[in-house]
Image (cartoon, rainbow over all chains, first blue to last red; front, side, top):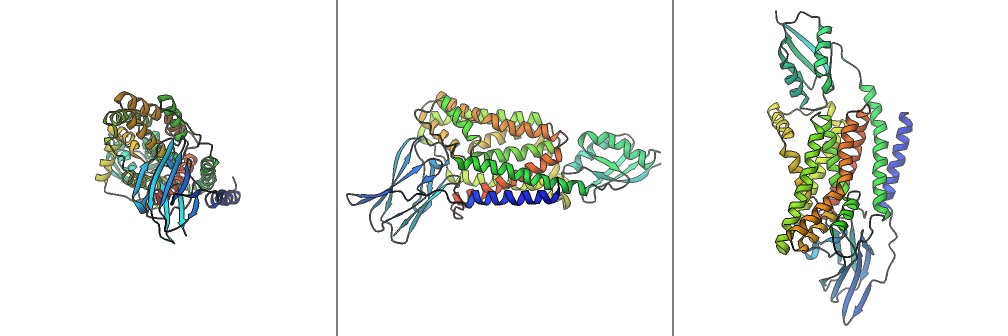
Length: 125
Length: 336
């Protein structure tokens, strides 16, 4: 193979990798936050990643995070939220309630899966 | 009469090559002493033989040829050839990486498997896990170690067999233990994340080594240390232990299965769940190790080693960044 051709192919492949990694997946602004009886519930689905990826919620209100899993065996089942010292392997199917306390405005909470390739972010406004 | 000769040697890709060549040629009656210099790629031989330097180079080459070395009086110029290989290897390696990451992003691997975890479902989970992002760590490690072992010309098939047997056995037994202890045991995230980072560093070093970055400025440690490593490489228990270690590598699927084994409640059911899971991952991992052995002994060996090096480095970087993010050291850079 010609060296120049190889370099061109290589550059093309590098760009493709860049697109795969940086390209935003369709993060639809879902209605995943609701307030019931004075408690704010944020619901995330965990399977092959966390959905929605980024959510925003109200600050200064008692907040609970609900992780929904259905048949999740991949990394997203092993959840780590460092800022509140949470680490647990979620049940394959079910709902897990995590107490986030009363988050302050401007704070955000980030969760990653055990291997670190999936993550989610919740911003409190 | 004792005469001294100096030959150029090619094919000394590994640091243990020095020991290997010296061992082989020390067994020759005509050779009184031998000294291999990896940096200069030369070998000094003292011999009583009356043959000419060219003849001697040819005779000695016959002895070490099965291991991939050749001696010559003149320096062989092969630089250009290897330059071309890397330019072929980079696109090939990148293409494999892209296929792998597209597969992860496609969501094809996220099929939900509901219901009770039975040996059948854990076998299927194993099959999925073996092509999932876990492949980045476990598969990358298997590929880099296999390629390295095949390159060093150790009895590779036996080593791979032991690795896979050790892996199956330790998964099954540890699964059984988890099942019988029940909830008592906690699977430590930080421990497995640190192990994952170590694995990715090993992958990066081996990957660079496979590409041949270290070839020009080979790092030569005192040969005592290499004797030690070589002894370990040949020991039966080493591949068994590495197989055992893969149980603790960070992989979401493995961890889910461990939890399933814990909640299964008995030695036998935990044993069966973990065994079927490991059995499901076997086809892909066996393909990686035995596949690299067959390539390594084929005529495309140099291209294979370099392409494998590119793939392993790519996976190593991915695993390292993900691992650091998992530990909370850096912000997650991607969601794959």
